[in-house]
Length: 292
Image 1 (cartoon, one colour):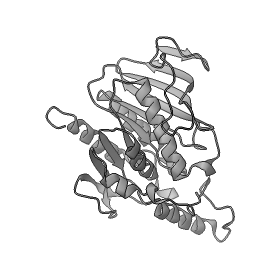
Image 2 (cartoon, one colour):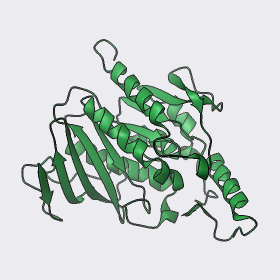
Image 3 (cartoon, helix red, strand yellow):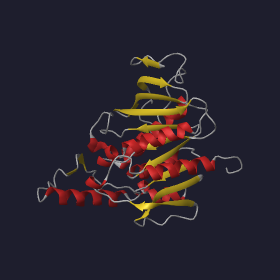
Image 4 (cartoon, one colour):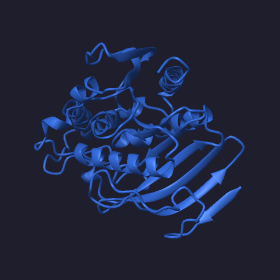
């Protein structure tokens, strides 16, 4: 069954009939701009845009036709060219969580995918704001679901920092890159090498995306302290190689056989599939009777 809704005319019986939620960033109401939904025997999918500041952010939400108590995840995707390369993993994660009885909301950062705006505006600070607005939208659209954050690669940094401002039960980070300056530096080195001496330091771009300016980096955007102070259950799911940051004892560090290699030619679609599967299993275990 397919139900289509025109811009600014959501159906009266939909989850948003009671009106728009308020933005967690305080910048604007999180108002859905257009929505289309599909519903099958097990899953429902909705795609829409919502306002975040001056930008229209694209979201795709998968939910179970028969919810079973598993939480909903606001999935913060990678940044830049990794967002494109690993897009299938984000959608696979959302579908798998919905198939287990939960929900998953995948968003596109400003200037990425189907969202409006300039990709140069996709700073960590702006990503944290967008993540918070997506969380507000999800919680208002499905109030019966307990929503939490999940992040992949640099999106894990945004998810960890954004988790400070919401009441989430779990925090799931997949192959996280929690040190944003180091992440951007690594991408810049790869781009310099690939440019064969034609690097433009005044307008640095890397693999189709402008590199964010980190000169105004703020300590409150550091992800490791946010992860260590998370009050709920937190897990990092990663390949066993290479070695990563040392987490506190309260963070579950789950490793999967294999190696992560950053590089444009080394990535293939769904390269994180083993980690997605392990993450969904962890989420399911944490919500079994007697485990919470």
